[in-house]
Image (cartoon, rainbow, N blue to C red):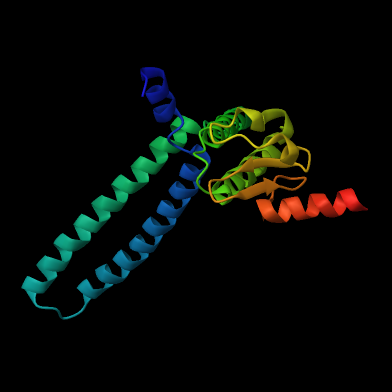
Length: 190
């Protein structure tokens, strides 16, 4: 792998949109942990043995510190990437769109359902930022096996190693090559 390719893999290796969702989930987990911590602290008011109270206090302090670190990590990430403006969010989504495009063009041809899922994810990102997915995808540039010319007219956009094709007006249908040929024959005979 060339150095440029390694750089691209590293650059596009993190999907920021997903990372934001993960951060929100992490904050929810921290919230739940803090509620549980509050219950544990409430136990200190009971007639607990001194040794048990000491152990519980140490555990509560450790949990409180760990949650403070989680909150700091989330805050640092959000401060860096969000900056509370729409421009940053738009730029992040554009970056995620280009990451998906890179993923699509590096598809290995093993399973067209992977390609279909990535294109669906790309479409969702494009819808958020007003890009037209058709302007971004050129299926002739896929690194996987080329689609035979007679199938391109159906249209078939991609073909995997098992003979399944990506088709449909929104690149969202999967059909076996035999089904595509049957449909083409039906269309030609009508």
